[in-house]
Length: 122
Image (cartoon, rainbow, N blue to C red; front, side):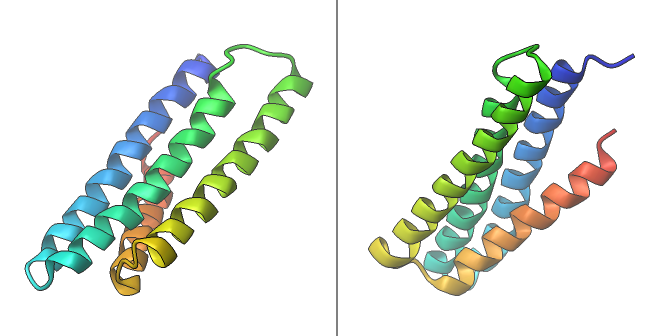
């Protein structure tokens, strides 16, 4: 039998590391053509990986909790993740003016690796 909290933490760590690895791999390939776009790719992947890590920290950070409290934690985790994503993407695009194509490449690499990890990690 799995301890759901401990198992959730392991899955969160594995998926976050896989997301960062996928973003770095794509960024290394893109960096052979343009270093600035490669940096934007790593940034996009890191934004998604950190967002999912924030979600996991909020969801699993409290340990064992009553059902109502766990549901509130899930809702708050999703809200915090979306606040992080909106703020980080705004900063990356509007303030730091990172190349959009590289940023989206990193976002897609991290998000696809997250979906694959959820299927593959059991």
